[in-house]
Image 1: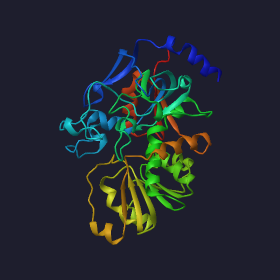
Image 2 (image 1 turned 30 degrees about the vertical axis):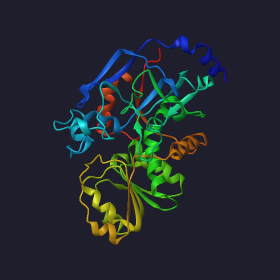
Image 3 (image 1 turned 90 degrees about the horizontal axis):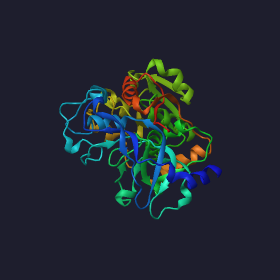
Image 4 (image 1 turned 135 degrees about the vertical axis):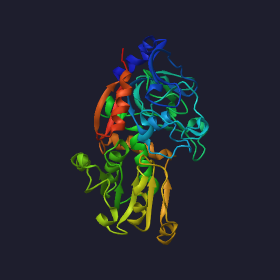
Length: 375
């Protein structure tokens, strides 16, 4: 309460005219990320808040957006163009929403910080709140079903000292976590929870691919919270870390899944990888099983035997849009102490190139987080 009063009294005086930020200047390699110290601080419009960013997580969607991987012209895995970009990007469909990006764009789907100013119609007592922002924004599309903006894609995000966000989608969080931990939550945990919500996972057996990454590690924790038996796929070097997340069984990511698990042994698959192994994920699903996907880092083009799909009465869920309850649940889980992210490493905002190189190298477990200058 005392901190909140201080923010309300001094907040406006503490807001500079310009800020440090990373601008994406076009689709391509890491060289398209420009660190600037003279970017105008945004002003909150009606219904918006201004947030002084304390920390911002690094996510696969940031890289996919930068390299234009969402374009249907791209058929390779993310890592193929992760550092240098692709030559064949079609800018017209290179965003996840299919709407061309406008440049420069400040990326960053994860935002944790403090509210320092409010726009028209927003309760001024919000100033001083420590908040996280729902990464899949619905305010700007009038809450139409299956439509949303991603912060850091359709509007500027958290790779800066300040950003604006809709007040209605900016959530105050009460917990003993530090800012870095909270910054690891919005994208990864809402994506994972969204998949489990769509698949209606209960006390069943779930297979999680890419279990050592940000979304995968979140999915392991969130599935255990639901009482599921979790089988995780990861590399040999990540076994102990993934086991510590709560996985009941761990299988090498390149293993023959049918040989390891047997046919029709899994109730739900949570997939973030796709690629060459994809068809075996349907093979191990039980009759009536559910498959949820929110990523394809190993490659977006997969073979399917449609007979497997219909003869086994499988249900496939593509998971981007999230019902409002998904992010609200995540905040509840944090405040109840039911989840906690794994932080692999932090970086100064100006070192974003190194952070994304490390992200692409996939030697870490959990989340990488950027910290902008706080002065």
